[in-house]
Length: 306
Ligand code: SF4
Image 1 (cartoon, rainbow, N blue to C red):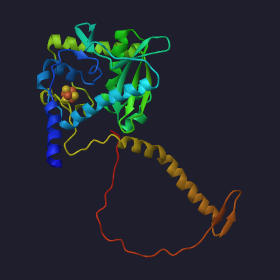
Image 2: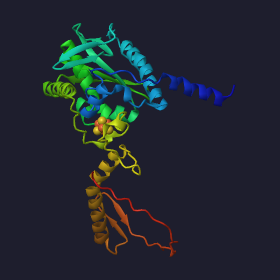
Image 3: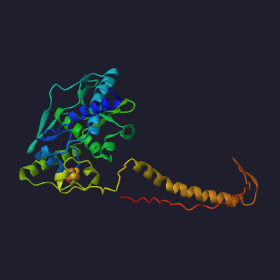
Image 4: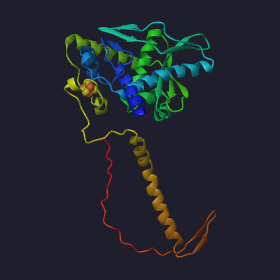
């Protein structure tokens, strides 16, 4: 046996685990998904979903191992943790049900059991997510959907708050984020569930969502009929957003820096040494070597807000 053979078996073992499961109702885990058309199609045509790939299966399996690690971290800190005894429970809404299963519940100082949703996430997201607002404003559709899960759990258990337990996939560190029950957000979600069940009853497919990034990787895009894909020659790299935002924040400061630098040089003028209150300024000459720039192809990067 050699490494290539072992790797082939590793790949096959993951590939063999990939399955498309029936979906007959809304779930706490998908209610927050931004596209109602997708949720409609998922219930009506679950068997037509494109299976995910081996890469994603690895991500799911890693997430499951991180759940045990996270529970261990929480217990080590002295908290009592309750894992659910049922496979799933349901909440009735007009026209159908929402099923769910909390990851754990944690006991507070008064003995109250509060729902906790465990997520293993990248170091980048781990640093960025510090409040429920950060989740709801995330550029990643699946992260925007996470609070809906906790909301359904809080509704089920009649609790005024729940928690995310986020574990950094790189360092293994766990942090908690408190999520208070928000009645407006809850109303929005329940209305959304009822709209989807009404659409299913009337057999009227909801409109496609506006956000093209949601369509990327949609497992039902091939039967959607309204898929809004990014053209094939365009890459998506949302992590560049943070750098571009920061560059724009600094652009005014850069202009001011250049203006002040010019003023300093004008004020120093021909003087070779000047002492200010805090600084010594020296003006020295140097010879700039002449050279010819060889011809080459240059690239100009233009950034426009979408
Ligand atoms: S392709 Fe886009 S619009 Fe169509 S169901 Fe999927 S996410 Fe919704």
